[in-house]
Every structure is written in C-alpha cells, then in structure tokens.
Image 1 (tube, helix red, strand yellow):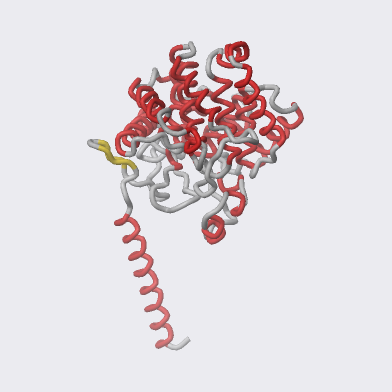
Image 2: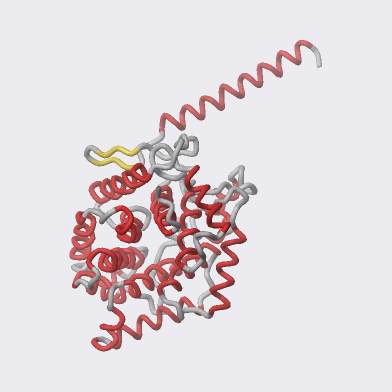
Length: 374
C-alpha cells in the first residue's frame, strides 16, 4: 500500500469513527426520560447504563415504586408493562420488604369503577380484555397478600373479566407489542392466575354462580388445548399451573421446566429473544426489526427473562439450592444498573424500553423467592 493509500485509509477510519460518535451522541441526546410526572424523573433506559458495584434492593424498589406512580399519574391507565406488572408482583413482596402503598390499590379500584361504566361489547375488543385481566389479577394479589380476604372490588373485577372473555375461552390481546402484548394466550394465563389467586373466589362462585365457573372451565380448556405461540408463552403457562396444579398433566409440566433450563445462557441468565422466533411475536414490523439486529445470533441475558424464569421455576418447586438457580442469582446480583433497574432491550422500538420495568419487578421477586434480597 502506498503512502497516499495509507493516508486515505486512515482518513476513512477517522471519518467512520466521527460518524459513529455523531450517531451515538445524537441517540444519547435524543434519549427520552422513561417516566416523568411532577417531581418524578426517571432517565431513559439504555444498554450502556453502568452496572452497580453491589446489588441495591432500595434502588430497585425506588425504581418500581416511582415508575408505577409516574405512569398512573401521567397516563392514568393500567398498562401491562408498568402499573399492571406492579400490582401483579409487588403485593407478594410484602413479607420481605413491607406492604405497598395503598394508593396504587386505590388507583386500580378507581379504574375499575370507570371501566364498569363502559359498553361491554366495546370492552371486548382489542387489548382491553387483557388489561382487565391485569386489573383483576392486581386486585386478587392485593387480597391474597395484604388483606387475606376477598374484597367486593376483586369480585367485581373478576366478574367483569369473564364478561369480556372471548368465545374460545381466551382473552383478547393485541399482537404487535410483545412480549406482554403479543397473543390472546398471554391474556388467558393472566386471567387464570387472577381467578385462582383471589382468596376463596372459585369456591364461593361455584355455589353462587355456576355459569361463571363454566366460563372458568372454558378458560382452562383453552389453555390445555391451545398450542402456545412461543416458548415464552409456555413459561407463562407453567406460571399459571403453579396456581392451578391440575391444569396440565405432570409430564407436560416437567417438559416445560426442562425447556426453561435448556434456555439458560452460560453466564447464568436467560434471554427474552431466545424464547420466540422473530415471526412468533406477532404482527407489525417486529419480525423485520428483530431479524435486522446485529447480535441476533448472540443473545445477551436480560433482567425480564432471567427474573421471570427464576421466579416461575421456584413457584414450580425447583429448590433455591439448585445450581442453575444459584448461577442465575449471581447474574441478577451482578447486573443491576445504577438506576436500580435491570436492562432488557425492547422487542419493539428503541425508545422507552418499558420492558425494563417488568424486567425489574421480576428480578426482585425472584431474588426474594431465593432468599437473596440481602
């Protein structure tokens, strides 16, 4: 190579680096706050956020508490990825970290009052049935872990939930914002957990309203007979089975446990993207985006899937001394970010990465179930 060619090549390298810096700087500059309401400001999530030198339970709890408060205040809705995930998991943490604020429970009850005024046919469309399932599940979790008694609000939410059940027994969802909003199967697992968790609801309803029990049986048949759209949905099915032990046969249950084990990565974590092919996550342009990701064949472990895998395996009876779980706990404790959350890249847009919210709720609960919150 001549001196002139060498100089030209060097110039191209410098130009390339400048362009990469410009793109990176521009992306960072445009990074939006993930949650923002009144005095709550949570910076945008990104893969380069520094990891904490040591695990901080306080930082993790602050993140989920403030995130849910900000979403409820700013958006005033029950979203699967934030407020829905909060009340679905936070009450179960009460024995370990104290009870959650009653304000979120009040928010759910208020949402229930507003939704009940709407037309039932309209409520049966789009994602609304799955949102109602999260509403009922959150109230059921509150009753189970906070008051230990069935409330009239939870009973009303469950009845509303079955009012909007689809004819095939599922609960309508949308298929373009995975993983929480990617299939009717997902909504069905949440509904099954809601009905089975509410203290005494199934037993009480069996004598007072047999028609509701028939709808619940229809839901169970749907979950037994419908092929899950991806391995992620199979994890959710196993989670539902931990609340409804006779939902599927033991052999199938053990097969799902083994599937989860096989997905564990060498570093001890699990990767959300390995639990479904690009096309299996639903409609929209998601498949094209996922296929274009440069690290498609080298998936990184993330907080959402690692936390979910561990807590479901624990609920399914896997001992906390299990070597795979111990390795996963180490990953969780060494991969928390400075903000208190765990990084999980969205399957959708690269803007807010709201999946880091459930990707923090799940790890906290997973660590609690493993006796590792210290």
